[in-house]
Image 1 (cartoon, rainbow, N blue to C red):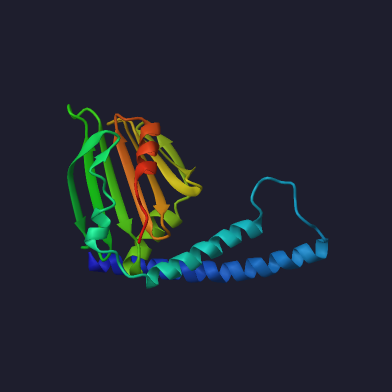
Image 2: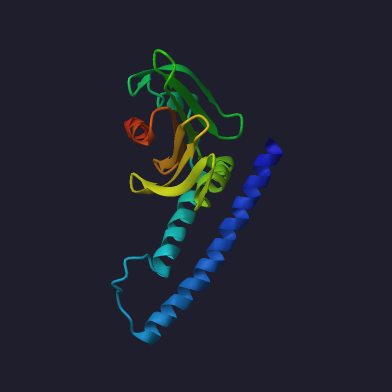
Length: 208
């Protein structure tokens, strides 16, 4: 596992360095073109190249800050798992930092077990956590679908998120960031997508 984390970390560092170099070159080129053409703001609603580059710059800065953050304690992570979710009681939970970053997981189900929620909260501070954040979220701009379900990029709480659906067990999933350091995954079996989003919004993900 330590070797895997090292590989992920190295990949994240190389990716960040490459993106930073590309950003500088592309920004300088974009500024020159704008000056030569004398163009101003465009009425096009699609994001401009500069908007995209700015977003990448902001993400790179955030990840640099995340590397310097101290890890949350297991008590802090456990406190983010509510006793009940959408009127379902928590059936079990676990908190650990065995992969080099903190992970809290809680399971919830109704009385007859026909509906279930699962919540996973990753504290992506530090080098290992930042590498995981990069692999699982930052580079995930996608849309795929087959006979078993789909996975696609979407928006949740004003941020990019990853929405998924598994037909085999009628399970919706939502992966999204929170508090500039957390990566949160909420899955609902036989609950519907709207309930998954409501459950995600009900979480207290503030970091004190």
